[in-house]
Length: 147
Image (cartoon, rainbow, N blue to C red; front, top):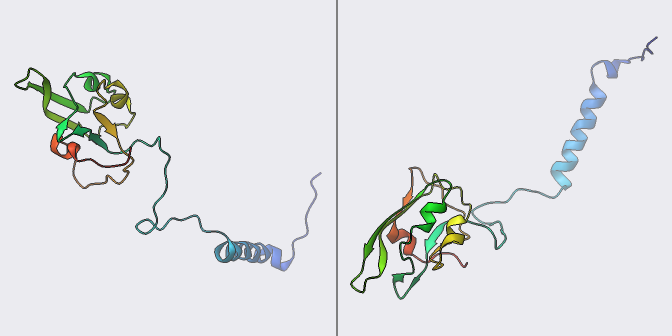
């Protein structure tokens, strides 16, 4: 046999429960610590291991990349495209170096595979754009980040 609860006038319309819920909401609204970050003014701090926007390290304006094709080979997303060329001193260099940022999964395998430490992932996380972005060599040569 089930026990029957007596329901009063206030319990019948859930008035007490509504007032309790409003009190909890007001207490959290007025006195609790806010979890929201006001983005343009406040920036979130990420760890040093964070992988963001790509860049190519260069020394005296000459890129370290020797177009060895290891980074496009190990890239699981196949977002890196390199066209190799040769300098006068018989050293290879990338004529065309492109990274499709929409396909990239920011795994860091290209950074680990590079024998010359040429390609790096910075700590820049603001990469939103309206159109599909393919980073070209000139853009990647600009030194950004502090990694």
